[in-house]
Amino acid sequence: MMMTYLKLDAVAKRYGSVRALRDATFSVGAGEIVAVLGPNGAGKTTALEIALGLRAADAGTATLFGGSPKSLAMRRRLGATPQLSGFPDALRPREIARAVAAHYPDPADVDETLAAFGLAALANRRVGDLSGGEQRRLAVALAFVGAPDLVVLDEPTTGLDVESRRALWDRIRALSGGRRAVLFTTHYLEEAETSATRVVVIVDGAVRFDGTPASLRERFGVRRISYIGPDGPIDIATGDTDDYVRTLVHSGVAFRDLEIATTSLEDAFVALTESPR
Amino acid sequence: MSAARLVLAHTRLMLLDLMRSPAYVIPTVVFPSMFFLIFAAPNARQAARADFVTLSFVAFAIIGVTLFQFGVGIAAERGRPWERYLRTLPAGPFVRFAARIACALAFGLCAAALVTITARLTTPMDLDAMQWLRLAAFACAGAIPFVLFGIAIGYWVSARAAIPIANIFYLLLSFAGGLWMPPRYLPGFAASISPYLPTRQFGELLWSIVGAGNAAHALPSLAVYSLIFAILAAIGYRRDERTRYA
Image 1 (cartoon, helix red, strand yellow):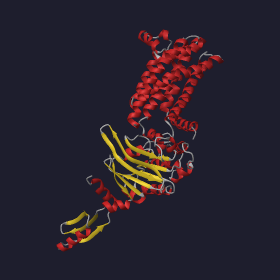
Image 2 (cartoon, rainbow over the protein chains, first blue to last red):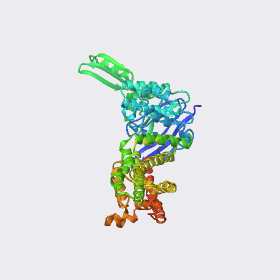
Image 3 (spheres, each protein chain N blue to C red):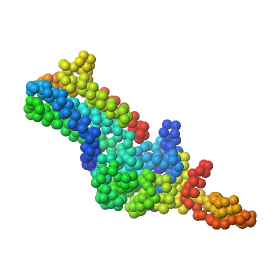
Image 4 (cartoon, each protein chain N blue to C red):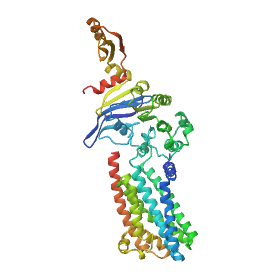
């Protein structure tokens, strides 16, 4: 039986007349890397805010390590990232990391953590002088510096180029596993595909899918067929490629460069989030 | 991980951030001594007069630190993503608040010390040991309503508006309170409202150290101000908590 770190159970939340979450149920357990996906405004941020103890649920329950996310004792096992461009400019990475580490009973070594995220040479620079990518790395390093059991990363790679994103994920994965669990949101489905052990898709304030990236692909995947026909290139998505090809061949239409693409998580995600409830 | 260690960590971070910001350090720490040197020192030729104006400018310096540290500081920070991040850390709201008080104490001490050093160097100002002790105690006590006033500004006013608003209150109330020139020289309207201002009562409290002010009246007046500002601050704080973190 896997130890559950975080559990949202039928959580609902509204801001005035806006319903941010209506039924969010999912959990994160030891050793997992869980991606929370969903279109903008679907309720991902609200779900994370409730998990972090920043906001309280209107209905349903959120439990962190079996207690309330607002409780200090529970949050001592939790590490999170500051949002984009959130640092006081005049401070230095080592100063910030040391202050953050001071909150935890058994933190990681500050310099080792900074080094793990490629910040060793920048530890004593002004944060305001760091590039956007370096600030992102610092933000993620802060989530790990307390050596927490649960790490929550809100869009850790937003604004980074492909190479930096991959490098950052290599570092995150290297520090994950074992007891530690990671919960993250992202706009890059490729990150969920390569790094997540489980994917939770939130649409319109409710969890629409909860399973492995592979199962998401299988259930909502559509294969793509492309070829060059008499009127130019054709590229379509279809549930039954076999049937499509059979019909195409029988029709006698001239075609070349027939390709059947394996479905991507992105396609599955689009199919899922755009499908009616 | 004890509360004291956390307060220390946050105080350190806040101090480093403030110390490296000239826009904060110069107006709060340097300006009161500079104003003293320009406006007060030339007229303070006798010891009694020098003591009086020095005490006035100590009050002025402390009010500046409290209004900027709490008013401008809280207004600027409460909406920042950084503040939101700090709230995810395992530390209660008390920790951050205690750090802010510690920083205000440090900066208030610097600003007040600079005024008294300037006074010692340029005027015949001279207090005995007992008077210095009373000054330290009265300065801390008299700062309380202004800390609360600052917190109220911080929670009621936007980050953009906080700087001009804090400045207007700071300068006008200091002037009308008789901190720049002794109350008997104030022009008509300022003289008529002066006795009702918290700045005037803070002045009276400090002036009482050299027998020139009425502490028996100043202390209860400052207590009443503290109560009013505390209520305003509490309402503002709750409102902010409700909208941001409910």
